[in-house]
Length: 255
Picture (tube, rainbow, N blue to C red):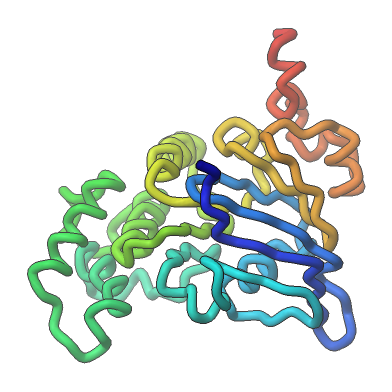
């Protein structure tokens, strides 16, 4: 049986004040996909995520998420933004931060029940943060905080997880562990990951989409230098930080 199609964009155009941000975008995401989206700043990556979340509406074209409108499907989607508005200096524990993700189920003014706390405990264990559950969120490293924010997204029990540059301020060691964690989660849900790190994306995701107003979609994680040139308008060596063998499988085979 074919995998369920959970996101469908058909000839989607988005413009802000007359300036085209996304042009004729077509994209399909299926159950258990792990899709990495790459592209330059200002290329429309965050706008694409906001479309799927129902926070931005297309000028023309059609978008369906779980076979309904993005607004109605939002209850099935977990989101980890690039810049959290959360105040990490606020005197709140890791467990309390993750519990906030249960608002969708518990309601803003209802007390958390045993099920909420059980799901929170399981999410913290999944991201390896259960032992730090009582620690103040601001006392954690940036990488640990990102895992907590991921747990907060997971307690909503999403079928689709969206992450916008989740490792942009995380050191390399923590990045590796974070991507490995996502590799485990992809067996339970679909994942869409936006990242500037071509090397990390090409190693860990299953499919790649290059976005620079137009979308160049690849049903694999292999991207050629020509495709990256077309997307970024700069040499592939600059994109891959001087290590092009991280981008192309043929280069890896030659090592």
